[in-house]
Image (cartoon, rainbow, N blue to C red; front, side, top):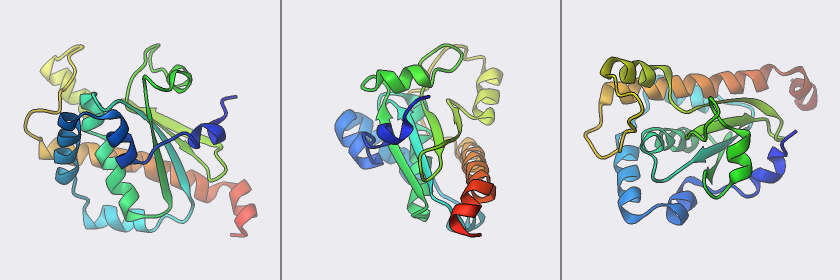
Length: 187
């Protein structure tokens, strides 16, 4: 079994990841998208109510358009609650994690692994949400990759943000309802 506890020690915060792996242009694009991510009051309240620590390992690439369009969402989530510990790993710098998290046989990004406070796997999700895949299917983009350069589609951003929040909430509820953790925390 993969040792996520050891791997998390190698992870970077959002800002460390961009400083180490992003070019000035990439950091600018990530910043533009980050500013566009706005959480609703209901989303903010949901995140504020997290009671268990949810550790998240995010395999990403600063160069990746899908990461530009999704990883800033995770940072917004993490800013709301101290119960989220999101660590970023560059796909090309961490081949062991990349091999562990292949999707459909390929090294896709972003991919997140949800972990308990003691680094036990809860689940993983990536590389795009259902809304994004539906959009790509409608537009028949095939294997084209978004650049993160064009205008931000606010309705798509809202849909993708909600779908990611659903995954974070699912992982948190699994932790909250875990009999092992309820026994450990006496609740």
